[in-house]
Length: 175
Image 1: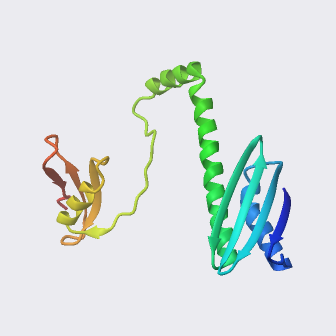
Image 2: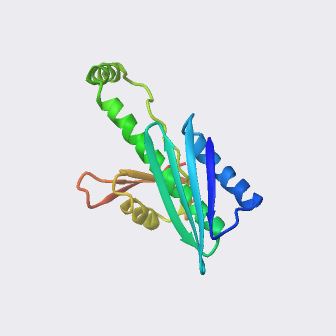
């Protein structure tokens, strides 16, 4: 990555230069050839860092002010990385949606799969009361059930939403 650092009313020391280069390595992983123009400014109590990154025909820009120059640079990096990820996701989505034939073929393949585990989800199981499990399940409207360790019995239980959508069921092992 080609990096150009300019200081306005501030001296760009080797430490600042190294810090900026180290932080821009986070952006380098997204592009093969990119250029970055970094402008550092000092105004009374505020330190400003402006970063422009040009890559693959796109320009990304971030500017942040803080009392600490390093904090400004960190905030800029977070902003830039978010912009780059968002743009990358958009491009991938357009490419996926562009191929209807591929989607139809995938649908046919999915309908052929039967009696197979096709998705695995991992989550933390924690010891709570059944009443707290109901509250936690209510906080997750897209979930239909929640497994937990019952504090009262020490066994794994599952709370689930009944078909009426208002009440809950509890699955508790006997042995």
